[in-house]
Length: 270
Image 1 (cartoon, rainbow, N blue to C red):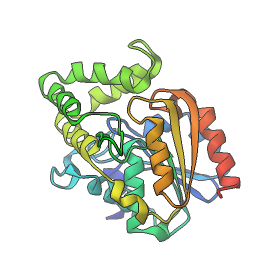
Image 2 (cartoon, one colour):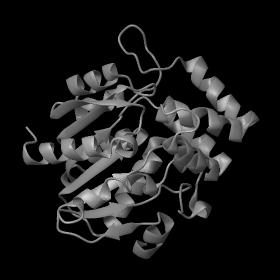
Image 3 (cartoon, rainbow, N blue to C red):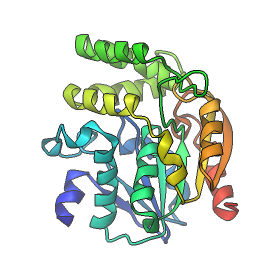
């Protein structure tokens, strides 16, 4: 089981001192998106990277439609990776976008495993539920986005990448995201997209006991600042830091801001 998981999820361990930083990428992405962060923690932490099944260089043959049609399947990937590496506790989970919800679910299932959660651009529910909650999208707009995936997958990728990056069509991060989207099997991507955009994990927030650092972006189409404020008010042990960033991927576009926020919080998490 151990070796199977390490291959299945393309697990990479960067040697360093404890504690462990476990990085979980967002929808349509892969572990390479963390390359701008990992050098900063090389001497202070052991770092673990992986790809969810169906993403990056994972074993696509292990993709199970039933398992991965909800975020619980991705949560199980996180727990499987920890178990395969014999991690018992003290793990600092660093998640981007939908992986923030995955990390929250994992911490509810195994609170003893995690010491801290770093949530970059989290959104527990992308669908608006007016007037009490603004997730960023109307349901019909998200349905339209998924319809576009069916009709023109490359066109969908080329449309979504600049929305996520906020860098325009020719930006370096736009290109990196588009390449990642396009390299993902379309059938896998559609399942992950539906699990991402139509999950509602708001009711889970009060169950989280692990301290959380919420890193929200000042201008982010996929996760407005109001979502960070909502999370902060519902996660009992949380700190909210709004980064002066445009787009949804500060760990790629402004890694120093993320690194500085993490280091500050590690020293003084309360």
